[in-house]
Image (cartoon, rainbow, N blue to C red; front, side, top):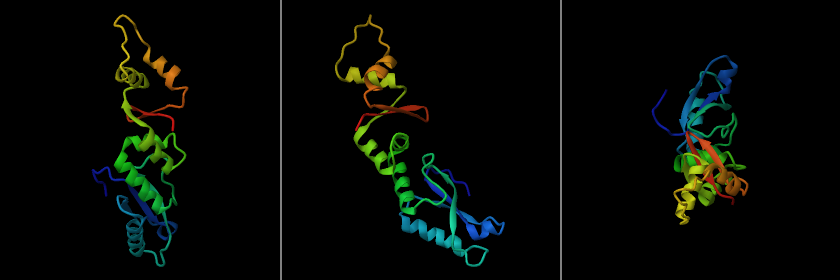
Length: 171
């Protein structure tokens, strides 16, 4: 079943069916808590064509950050990642690229996120304008080099995702 939603979801397969050479599973929306996801998995297993179906594996996912979901990921973590992904969008997904885990990515978004820009240089140019720095019209500034010299080596991060550069300050 394909939908036109951006809701994070997982495809959960019944391993008893899989091992018997049959495909049986379900797409489950993860915009719910872990108990609701577990209930949907239990319902899928109960409807299995194989007797005593008890085990499952996550065989696919949609609208989750790359690498965030594994075959046997914890349902509580899946629900938390889905909620953060829906709430914070690309900012959260970009933070996962520099964070050590889900909680660290949330901390980056909440404490160190400075928005999405066309490039790191565009961020630096705007940063200087916001600080009231006046650049004479005759002076040509290489903003990308300014990023590398002033921000890029000082713990700032620029993460390119979906055509935008997400900027994070050091924490």
